[in-house]
Image (cartoon, rainbow, N blue to C red; front, side, top):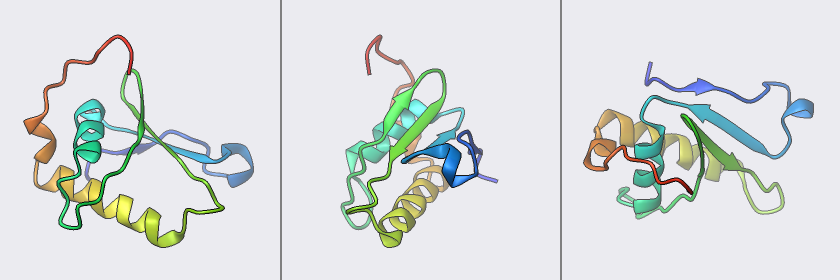
Length: 95
């Protein structure tokens, strides 16, 4: 309902250590994640992949379920509050 699509394989054995989402405002959402204006001051560094993909690297050694939950909550917060609209949608040639 928030406009996200799951773009990586749903089966863990085919996915590797990353999760990729798509969204029409993915570049702006990436910038909002990095900006860190969350209630907790959380800064999340995703990887943007053109044309509309947000990629999260998951390192099982130090990434826990609570960390993933915080990322999901932050994505929801950014989209519901329309915080991403404060960032332009012009993408640089190199991200």
